Length: 185
Image (cartoon, rainbow, N blue to C red; front, side, top):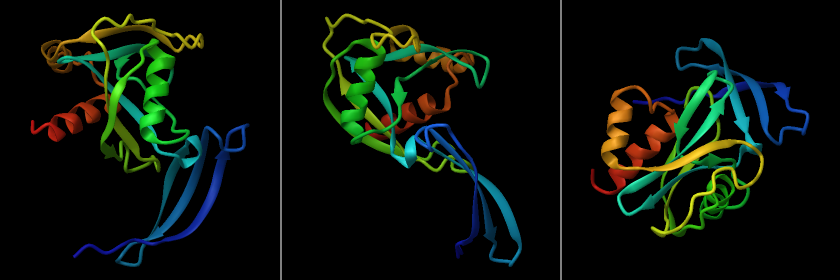
């Protein structure tokens, strides 16, 4: 039988300069079922709102963007994603437009993920979006320099990139798996 381990104390260890709008770090003390206490880190991003990862489809092809990720010190191909501001579908359509210039339709949340259940508090919605076949890609349309490139990948190209270790972003892999499961594998 599963027994909850209640949080007995919380200490906010860090708040960003915007008062926690982007990132907060907590040290939480828990009491395990055996009575032992343990301290764990918990990160809250975007004010605790639900984040989004966008699975944009053009037929069978899936859109990936290329971004520099300072935390890992390398470029990464990944699905567009971002902080939640309103609701997952609206947020996904906004992120898609900001990162690629594309206007999507028939958007729907197909799954909710805990992408790092050991540390990240926020849930992330996987939102599938349809994009017209003739829509032009304009990576980095928002002008913030975040996205360096964007392109459509076939299912075979994605599988090859995963096997080769070239596509390894956890948000992307989890969203692809959740989407596949929602479609019946």
